[in-house]
Amino acid sequence: MITATPVRAEDPIKVGLLEDVSGDLALIGLPKLHGSELAVEEINAAGGIMGRQIELIHLDPQGDNARYQEFARRLLSRDKVDVLIGGITSASREAVRPIIDRTDTPYIYTNQYEGGVCDANMISNGAVPEQQLSTLVPYMVENFGKKVYVVAADYNFGHLTTEWTEKLLGDAGGEVIGKEFIPLGVSQFAQTIQNIQKAQPDWLMMLNVGAAQDSFFEQAAAAKLDYPMASPVKVMLGFEHKRFAPPALAGLKAVANWYEELNTPEAEDFKKRWHAKYPDETYINDMGYNAYVALFQYKMLVEKAQSTKLEDIRKVIATGEACVDSPEGKICIDPKSQHTSHQMRLISVNDKHEVETGHDFGVIKPYWLGEIGCDLTKDNPQAQYSPSNLPAQ
Image (cartoon, rainbow, N blue to C red; front, side, top):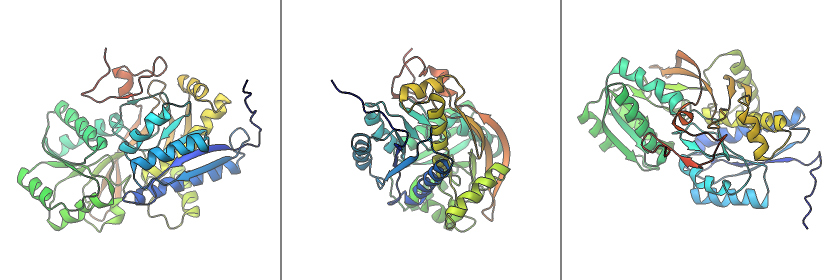
């Protein structure tokens, strides 16, 4: 007979963190490590979680999905972490998810993404299409026109977000007149720029990812490619307006839950604390902010559940009252999808690369998965859905 070892009050809560801080995604991944470290420091200074300190165990997969799988197994089996957090690309998330799904460990994915994952092991705290694209695409059609050219990274984020763009454009009477899927690491865009010039769209949907693919903006500016641009990932995630000289990003529109230029009192206090710890940080991006908030969401869930067990945490989520006060405002985890509500705002980059806040859309819940039949309070399909891949009725 095997007897479980009782947990002592002084035993730490182990948080496994998988974040790329080297490789092509390092510049957007480093703020995720910093956000996690800041949150752990603040939580531990305030007494920890249920009186237990957090032990943060970070591994750097360097953007390699095979390493993501290797390191996830190591954190789960050797380090026996209580929760796994992180991953940048959707491909890295999908590499980890089958591994975490064989355990009773919660996984928090901290990125904006293409949406659709219905999985009881996963909590998502980034923005999803019904929060970003359902607001951004109609705005762009109304203000700039119906013909759109898509430049997207060639993996599931790029493909599924393009699918969402096409659906929402169709609903608004528009169409995608050209689309290109670019492999990660590609940095030359002369042919893409020529293709766009030939197609003459009304605006561009930019779904490119990583430092190499961001070379598009400088090359497009040099070629005087002057089209309005929209994106669910630029500025807030990759802070291209800080990395490239004006006017490469001028006119780009996005809908974001967090961007460093947000100037509410809560946001200003958060930024002050962050820059006191990391004075050389170029930009507090959306992913770094999400990583910070994830630890406070986990603290809230564990303390309400009085347990680190996934089944007890899920009971808290099922109440519909799994909420925290964050630098963007009060946000809550949806019981059906385990995705997070967000305060969404339209932002725009001007000719000087300053970010201006436009329309405030208010709090938008992650409603789409629940509408199509995902209900994790009833079953757990561990599947990812999209507009062309709906649950069987």
